[in-house]
Image (cartoon, rainbow, N blue to C red):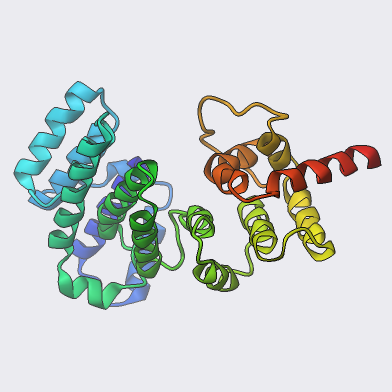
Length: 292
């Protein structure tokens, strides 16, 4: 948030300068080298001041954060991030959903219908779109937690349409959610459009997809081996050989235990509800132990 605040101030300063060419902007940025974004003038327009108050709220205790967010909404009633903050501290998930829905509406009003039509595909890269993207993501996360999978899928698909680069990283969970559906056509299409991916989520989901389609075959055994090589910890957590932690990891790395934990948390129910899938993993694990 602090980095985003600095970038917002930088963009505001560039607008104030009224540059006419890219070279002028580049020269300005070169002169900024070595300077802190914090040194830039504070934003003075109501919308900017409102957003800066929300940025500050996230860095303060909740009691003060609420007061700052209230001030932010007084300055800009359509500040989606103000509602995002209130939803993030709400313990009742149903109430959080209502607040996130308000955030989405506020974001839509703030950006305007014309903006959505013209800038679709470029969201997130434009700082002013991020509060709306966070609102949609928060709503989807709550719906996922309530097992309203179809609604969550719809939102994640909308987010990827707005930002195909997927800076928020929702394609991984979306892959798992699509795999949970009985109709796997959308899952297949989605995976084919992202063939360059190579991580535990992609490899294990692709493996389970093939198992769902044709059961245990020599070809599918090779798919499982590929998934295992990408992250050997997944099977141990999936089978209960290693105990899942009480809290999800904040950071994950390719091939590490945190990546495995994150995947198993989302995908375990799909594996356990696929007849024979865990038996297949167990048999594979026993073969690996004998090889070692």
